[in-house]
Amino acid sequence: MRPGPVLAAALAALSSAPAAAQDGPLATYWENAGSLPPAHAVEFTATIAADGALALRVCRGYRTEGPSCADAAGTVSPAALAAILSAAEASGLARDPAEVLGDTEIPVGGATRGGAVVTGGKTVTLPAFPREADAPRVGAVLDAIAAAIPAALRAAAEARAVAP
Image (tube, rainbow, N blue to C red):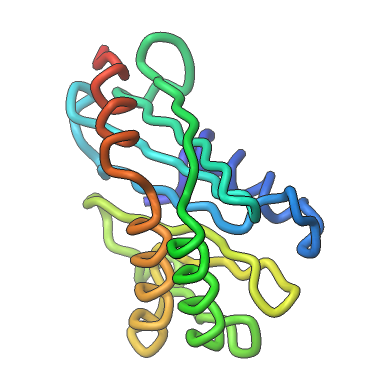
């Protein structure tokens, strides 16, 4: 499963931002429900700025705008920001990036997640399909980013996104 247009735009925004910018993205995170009928398809994106500002979007039914999508803004706690930075540094992904599965190795269908994080002065991609040896390092950073997103804020956005 490749990122949809909403996810691709979020990743492009992160990768084009200067890594040292204090007000730029620190991390992006996305989830995709996989190949499901439109009523069950959900795409979630979150962008976390270095100052803790959080922007998220939930879209249902393969739509990228309109009532099928809902946006929300909030704040990530300083402790959660520190946890993201700690996980990113401990992963070593800035020095030794994760290898990605080849096109013929990527599973068809199914839910997936990925993102990016700024660490060591670099924007590091957190691929949805890393090689088995790199999956724990990528997963630890993705887990830290996901844990930083307030559950109530996400639930509120999910409730507002209308299925087609």
